[in-house]
Image 1 (cartoon, rainbow, N blue to C red):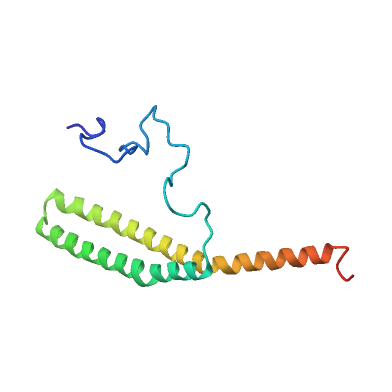
Image 2: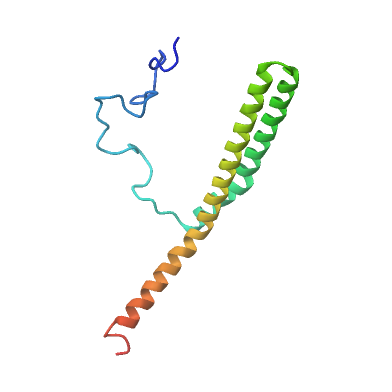
Length: 143
C-alpha cells in the first residue's frame, strides 16, 4: 500500500472519514455537531469549572507525566538494543519529538487548568465592572 494513496479500507463512523468529518459532497446535518443530548450553550457553574481544573491537576497531568516517563524508558531500552544501527538514531529522533510533544501538552493542560480556575473570577469582575460603569453614567443614580 502506498502512503497517502487514499483512505484505508474499512468501516468508519457515520459521516467520518480519515480526511475529515464528512466526505466531499456530503452535507453535514443542520443540527450541528452535537446531535443528541447535552446543553445547547457553553455555560457551566463555578463548581463544574473547579472540578474540571481538579481533574486536570489530579488525573490528567500526573497520568500524562507517568505515561511519558514509561515511553521514555521503553524507547531508551530499545535505543540501547539497536546501538550502532540507523534504527537507534531514528528512535532517538522519535524520543526527542515525543518529549517536545509531551512538554507542549503539559503546558496546554496547565493553561487550561489555570483558565478554568480564573474564568469564574473574570466573569464576576466583568459583571461588577459593567455594573459600576452603568451606575456612574446613569442619570437615575442617586435619586
